Length: 594
Image (cartoon, rainbow, N blue to C red; front, side, top):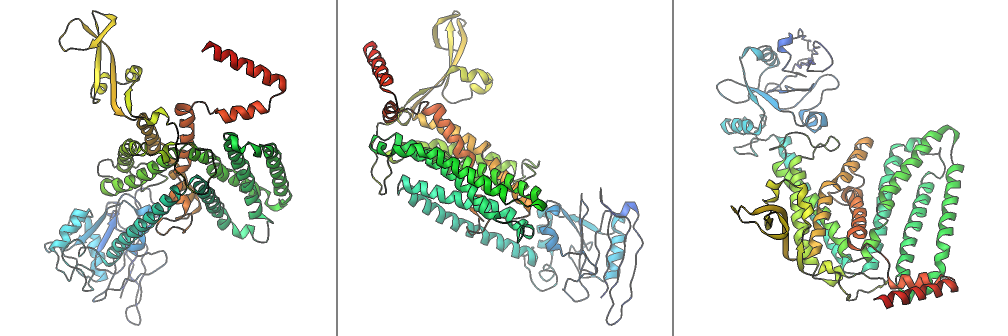
C-alpha cells in the first residue's frame, strides 16, 4: 500500500509546498513525491494517504486524510503528526468547521480508489472534474440516502438507510456516548435534587451543616488544581504546602461563621447567656490569623519564593470565591428558607433551560459566538434560559409564599424540625401592587403601552389635580403618566423577578470564570465526585454571587433594618448605668408622643 502526505498552506497557515512520503508496497516500497500545488489549488488538502474518500476543511489550517487500500478498511498513516479524523474532530481548533467530500460524479457514492487515483483527483479538484458536497447535515443525509448500504460505512459492510446509517462508526459511537452521558447526568441530577430536598425539610441546622460541608469540598477542588499542576515543584521541596492552605481556610471559616452564630444568639433572648463568649471571638480569630501568617512566611524557600507568593495569592482568591461570597448564605437560611431555596432553584432552572435551549436552537438564529471562554455557550441558550428563569421565579415564589416553613425566619438551633409560626412579612401576603409611575418614564411610550394591564392616566384641561383614565379622541385629555396595578399578586413575586434577572444575566458569569480556570490549567472537570457532572465546583459555580446578591437584596429592599427586640436588649445590657437611664427616658418620650 502506498501512502501520501502533503501539508497545505491555508489562510494564515504556516508552511509552504508539500512533502511526500512513501511506504513500501508488499516487501519493498518506493517513495512517490509530488510537486507543490499552485496557489489556486491549495484549498483542498492537508494530509493525503491512500484512501476511500477525500475530506477537506475550510477557513483554518487543518489536517485531512484520504485513507484505505484496495479491499482494506484499515486506516493507516505515514509520518509523525498525522491523526485520525475522529481525533481531529475532537480537537477544539477544528470545531465548527464544515467539511467537503469528493465523490464520484453521477453515482453520488463513495468508492475505494488507489493512492495514485486519489492524487490525480486532488490535482483536478479545481478543474471541476469532481463534485464537491459541502458537509452540511442536509447534504450528508442526502448522500447517505442515495448511496448503497454497502457503501455507507467505509466498506466494512456496516451502515444502512436513515440518519444512523449515514453515520460512520466513530460518529455512531459518539452519538451513543452523548445519549449515555445525558442519562447519567439526568440520574445524578435527580439524586442530587432528592438529597437536597431531604436536607431542606430536615431543618435549618442541617442546611447550614450542608453548606459548610460544600465549602470544604469547593476549597479542596480549587486548591487541588494548582497542586496537581505543580506537584513536581512541590514534592520534597516546599514544606507544609497544603497545610498552610487549609490553615488559611480554617481562619476564614472560623471568623465568618462564629460571627454568624453570635448574631443568631443576639437575636434570641433565651441564648443570651452564651454572649459571654462573644468577647472571645475577635481575639481568637486574630490569634489564628497571626499563627497562620507566621507559618506561611516561615515555610518560604529562597529558591521558590515567587511560586509560593503566587500560590498564596491563589489561596486568597479561592477563599474570596468560596468563603467570601458564601459568608451570608447562612444568614439567608435563618432569614427564611425562601431566601435560600428560591435563588438556588432559579440558578438551577437557568442552567437547565440554557442547556436545553442551546441544544435545540443553538446557533440557528444567532451565529455570533457568545463568549470565548466557553465556546459551547450560545446566545439562544443564554436568552432562552433567562426567559424560562423569569417565568419560574414568578410562579415558584407565589407557591412558596403559602408555606410558613419557607417564609418564617428563625433564631433557634433545633436538631428536630418543628412547625414554624410567625407574623408574616407583608411581602408574603396577597395584595394589589401599584408600580411607581416614575418607573415607566425611563421606558419608551411605545413599549410601555404594550405592557398588559397598563393604564394611561390623563389630566383634564391640563389640570394635574384632575386625573382620569385617558379616553381616545378626547381633546381635553392630555397624557400625565402611566399606571399599572397588579391585583391578587404577592409582593414577593416582584422581588422574585429581580432575583431571576440576576440569576439569568449576572450569575452565569461565575460559570464562565470556572471555565476560564479549567481552560488555564487544561482540565475538563474540577473533580469526578458527581457522575456525569464532575465536581461540586462544576455545578455550583454560579451559586456564589447569587447567594451574596440575595443577602444584599434582602437587606436593601426587604428588611432594611436588622434590629430586633432581643438585639436591643443585648445592646442595653452593654450600656453603663447612666446610659441605660438616658435610654429609658428617651423611650418614654417617644411613647408619649405617640
